Image 1 (spheres, helix red, strand yellow):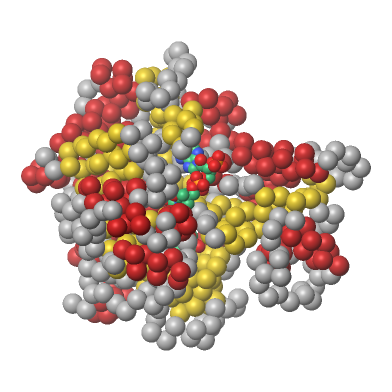
Image 2 (image 1 turned 90 degrees about the horizontal axis):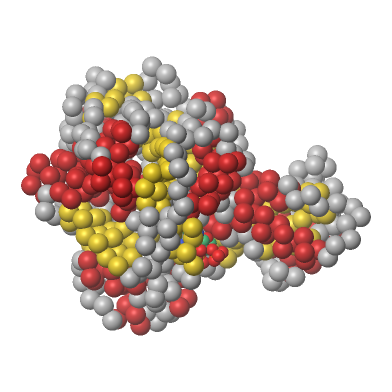
Length: 630
Ligand code: COA
Ligand code: AMP
């Protein structure tokens, strides 16, 4: 069938379409209803059905004869080690760790936080939760104790699992002191912490509360997969919203399995037994969906890479991993390619390796600039596919479906909406804009399976953030246009979310931290363009009157404060002190205008500005940081 035929079918009769796709996964009990719209605009998929994520990802393959196939390759240049785990071994290790969780009192529906680096135990922990119906919540290692505490208080985990450390180039990041501090700050206290001791650092354990992973595993018995409702939550993954309070995006069980398994063949054109590599982190949605779940649902070998695109040890590491492990598809963020291109502009390292196994490169996480796209295409000689998605959606909204029919690639576009997705570009009043004009990108409800059924304990926030502005549609928070061929171009966010090295950050959250500095009266944070990371946060600080200390000291402290409260991942290193912030007469800070000035984009004096002279002061301040040069 052609892409158009499949797409049209998915829109005309979503129930028949997804019902048929759902036949390809293992069920303990088939669904009663494919789509349950009894609580619209909140929808549920496959109500009445029962299945298990871990069974579909691991046990099923053992039973179907893939037991001796490698399931996970842990390739860790930062520790100079590699480990291959077969499906048989994975099943044994997951069942045993699930047994540890059960022994510690974890039951179906209980939450378990995983604060882990890129080691197999992170994946084992996730699958073990899924095995017993517990809800995992992975927190990215680059977040500080305070961010971890916010998540502890929101999802109230019974158990927290962490490793003694993560390894960043040039430094060992000790996780346990961060975890201890987070638990101290949080109101909710977990019953137990389970600590995986890595050889690089041994963590101190607190008697009675902390267990040693290895010792606990040695004593435990195995736990089997339990049958869970199709609509039960598999995980919560926090992502940035417009405020400092992160949103707990929930993924349901069956929708995730059905959509992700479908995507492996249809989008990525990967068959069971082939090697798939998502160079991301298990702490992000790409890591959940495409390091862990989708490749395993599809019986593929997945690569768990603990390193960086450059510096571990050189910009050839991606090519080494691809050729050494026979990778068919690589999925990463454009920023990784910009980092490689910067260090190896002529692609000399690419020439050192045989990359004939690589069929395609998929990029997502941020807009792919045509320079990066063309460099990757020229140097690798493979298909380079931009695709667009979000933590909320769990899989792509738009992509070029290589497994169905390769469509024309247009630079700057993630191609067309996928089956199940009906997109529109709307104006502020909810009317469709003209073809080619920019509008708010929205998707007609219901969204397909695998997308988020809700936010953890925040139904009203779900409605207000995504469903309220355009009734009948999901508001993506991205703006863009749709051309005459139905190709979507995603241009920018419509909210205060910025994208730094493929990581989603809230300027509001950074502002909240800066405003907590006792000498900062008010502040504004914006994302300015950056050649490597796409965007970088820049802060403008207004100090309390009468402060006599040097502004540089306060800037330094503010930068440190963001690192301590949010974490190094915020990459907040640029701030200036200004006398005033530009505002509208009603008091709204003109962040958009400031960003345009910083980026040397053309801008118009806002009609509602309170005092135009402030923009001259801001320009001078931004120039001191190397921006606003024109
Ligand atoms: N634990 C602790 N600290 C971490 C961390 C982790 N898991 N991940 C990142 N950090 C720290 C880094 O060490 C760095 O600290 P520093 O300020 O002391 O240097 C800071 O957080 C910023 O990290 P990062 O944004 O990764 O920048 P970088 O300069 O280390 O590397 C790139 C730049 C482009 C190479 C890197 O961002 C990259 O590989 N990006 C790929 C993007 C990606 O995987 N996105 C996921 C969506 S697909
Ligand atoms: P996250 O939830 O962290 O995956 O970030 C999602 C956001 O990243 C989207 O809302 C977009 O703003 C941006 N994004 C992801 N993929 C793309 C893409 N292919 N093109 C443009 N923006 C993208």
